[in-house]
Amino acid sequence: MAISTYNEPISMHPLSMEQLRLLILLGILSITTFVYFDLQLITESLSAGYLVSRFVFQLPAAMIVVGMTYVPHFKKRMQTAIMLSLIVITYSNYAFIIYAWKLESIVFPYEGTFLYSYFALFVLRLGFKRALLYCFVVLIGFIALIAHYPIYGSSSPINGSFVAITLIVGLFATYHLDSTQTKLTTLNQQLSLLSTQDPLTQLLNRRSYLQRFEQLLSYCQRTGTSVSVFMVDIDNFKHYNDHFGHLAGDDAIVKQAKILTRTFQRDTDILCRYGGEEFVVVVLDCTPQDCERMASSILQHWKMERLPHAPELDSAFLSCSIGVYSETPNSDSTPESILKQADDALYLAKDQGKARYVRLETCATVS
Image 1: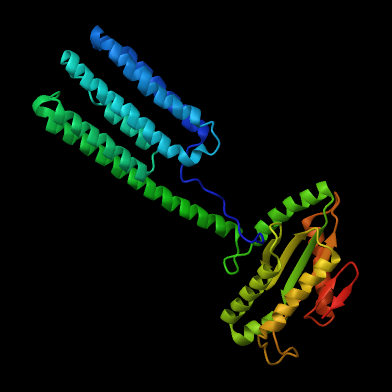
Image 2: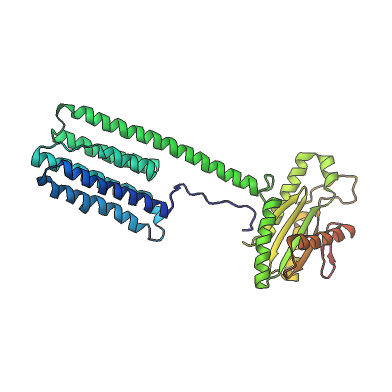
């Protein structure tokens, strides 16, 4: 497919692997800090179980995700890995709450559930679907906990409702952020297209063409690869536009773009609407025979269209003229200098009667 459009890929998950590692390591540091303070509050008999919860389940679950960030293609599974890791951490906390109650009848705080949930939703940025699944699993676990154990006594329904409302608020905010991010992503893609693409033909606009051409020219200068430029202009377009109207003129321009897209289909081909009814195509490593074949194909497509021209002209049907210039670029070559040669060839094609192409090197003319 010819290079006619450009879409900058935009990730729906804004965290890079480096950012994810840093955030998880900060979370691990926070858990480790809590260990110090929690050990000051709980009895010695609970310390062993507490340390098991933190260092056998919670911290390893986080460290596994950090290790997985070094695995190729992990980004596709990143959200699922984050969700599963945080479920393990949350349920490990639930297990210790039950352990502390059964062993010492101590009510260990459940507020860590909020910390883990908000860290998942807003710091690690779980997408809405996985956030919904995560919150559902977390809420079901807490409901099961308060239903089977009278840890919080008569305030259990209030605590359950508080956890549910907190998770719902977090989900609502996540949904809003996801929706906003999707809209921004779509808008960025549209802006990217508007900045690089001609809106009528969907080919590259002049600015984007020049950027691509400069990159391609640099490659040709390094490798000694030849470059060919086709400059295409619809013949007597002003007369056609004045006679049939601007909508018909736009249709003719779109038709020319489609002809070029069908003719030039290599990945390295650059197609551009240069301005008005003028088009520029840049191709690599194209022999004189290839150039003539493609130019002839463009002319033949117009002959097959048999689109009536303005009646006051000698030509009965709409056509185009083509200037072709090829060279193996050196250090002095520029996009402007090469295009100037193609423009000169186009001028010769127009001067010799239109509906034809001219290759500047040999001044070969074919109608």
